[in-house]
Amino acid sequence: MENLDAARLQMAFTLIFHIIFACIGMVMPFFMVVSHYKWLKTKDQVYLTLTKAWQKGVAIFFVTGAVSGTALSFELGLLWPEFMKHAGPIIGMPFSLEGAAFFVEAIALGFYLYGWNKLPEKFHWFTGIIIGLSGVASGILVVAANGWMNSPSGFDYIDGQFLNIDPVKAMLNPAWFTQALHMTLAAFTATGFAVAGIHAYQVYKGRKVALHTKAFKIALTFGAVAAILQPVSGDISAKDIAERQPVKLAAMEAHYNTENGAPLYIGGIVDAETQEVKYKIAIPGMLSFLAFGDFDAEVKGLNDFPEDERPNVPIVHYAFQTMVGIGGVLMLAGLLYFISLRKKKWFKSNKYWLLFVFLAPLGFIALEAGWIVTEVGRQPWIIHKIMRTKDAVTPMPGIVFSFYTYIVVYLTLSVAVTWLMIRQIKVLNAEK
Image (cartoon, rainbow, N blue to C red):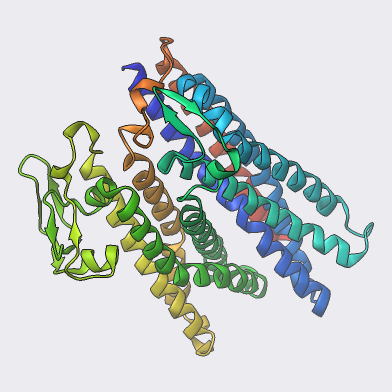
């Protein structure tokens, strides 16, 4: 395996794992503080039990997120030294602020975990809010750095040199808001449906129905609201990509030829040799409208760009279709959930609970697909239109062994987290 392939696979593999830990760590504190608030208001013992159960989950994912995130920070320097040499001074600010947010989160988590019956009730509850807000801030700051890679700004690139650096402008690059909004909503959608699905399964099995029903409602309320809002952020992101990265938009839809009134493809199998998409459903003019607000607008095709500047079209297209398809399903499921709050008899049906059990993993599948679109769609650039990925990789040999080591470490971490979470659920169900 070539160094470049090994480095890209290692980065992709670790990001795929870390993003799950990170998103759960960002979102679960909000479930916890809502349950805690309900305990303070009602003194219902079920909410207290649920809050203390969720705080253990928050602690577990905080630790695993910290470990996997630290490994990623080392990878940036070890795998992509040429990138860090130039990008470090430019986008160091969001990483530094992310570190500060992480420390605030750690301190607040300490207060929350050990503050029961020691701190004033309202202050104790407020430390939980700080955990959630600082976690979301960490995620947004990291996404801002990724946004800079898609939309580099805050410097002048002259004769191969990065000059006149403005770290604030780099952090607040043109892509940061759309990516941060889309990613934050995706995190709430994925985590909300995943946690709700776990509790739906417990209800389906008849275990502590009152507790798990309350947990299900809290988690899914967050997930459903985010899923319903996600198409709005997706539309904003698509329009932004159409302006800044037209080749990525063309790859997402597998459009090879420039045309006015470009159709939107739903599904389909990409044939890269014949440059066509077979078995798709085409909606005339819809891509032009979604991208530019005009059914007759021109959408550039892949053939308008040099072949060595195009991403892997099938991977980007299939990932995009997966993300959008699942997003649509979860949006409908979110609407169904809000309808079910009025039709309470649905909560007595096993089919209702099974539906949300099956939906549980879909949010994270869509989230992973979205990251594939973002990262693979930018290729061959590590810094869009400035530095190619192949020019940033380390010249040191043997990266493939590092890749295999990381696989073992992350799989071990995943097994440990899974075992801990199953154990926590069993302990919760066993409590009287």
